Image (cartoon, rainbow, N blue to C red; front, side, top):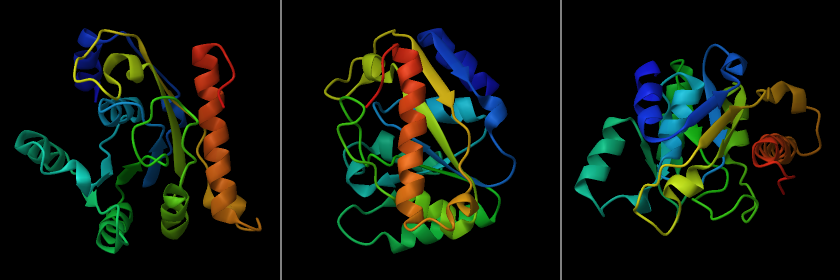
Length: 200
């Protein structure tokens, strides 16, 4: 991961904070999603390999992309039907002590707040009884955002937030909803610090 940070730093002014907040053991990593760069940026900030759940509609467009993501350990997940097989693989990865990543927004967005976060990250963390780690990525939308294939040298900031522990929400009327809202709040707060304005 140190090599990854050095390599990324050659292309982008990259700042990472909060690495000391990453708990030991298995965890679910959930970040906001602006760019195809985000999976690598988040893994570098967290400091460990992450197997990402990736919707299967991303595959089939580029053999290079398909092979690269699978080599990196991505878990293909269907968007149009119940992702039972993908969730089983994700739970097995967590049981083995690994880390699984996903994006509650469900896809890359133009701006933070345009899509309501889904509950999948909270469900996975609660089902596996592992921490949910919120991560905020700022600036990747300027470096390689939606609607472009051209990479620009822009500053990127990745902030690891305090982890959420499912047991803390066990008495909530809607544990998954409460965890998802707290994920949104922590990411919004971190993005607001970076952008210098409140995030939605």
